[in-house]
Image 1 (cartoon, rainbow, N blue to C red):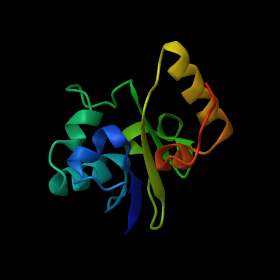
Image 2 (image 1 turned 180 degrees about the vertical axis):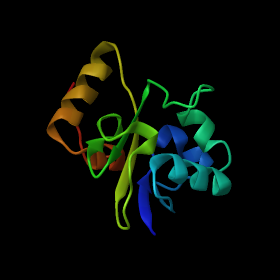
Image 3 (image 1 turned 45 degrees about the vertical axis):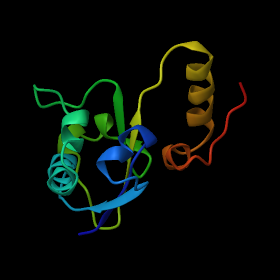
Length: 118
């Protein structure tokens, strides 16, 4: 099963600079374990010690927030696209990023295709 995973700039040091990596798994939890086996340390940046998604990390499956799909138990299918986005808060940048996210898909924001005016 091939899952396309879009990686935000801040986490690309774990993927050798790759914007997009392939992963596998039946759930988000399985996918993150698979990614961590090839990109050590990545899972630890996304999951708390209690085993939940960090509250400042947003994960989307085909532009749907996994928190509404079962969080780490969200089911994945072959060909799905998973986007990881760090949450943005505060200041003018936070407002611009929120505007970009609200008017563009999560994938476009990670790819740098969404630009919001300050």
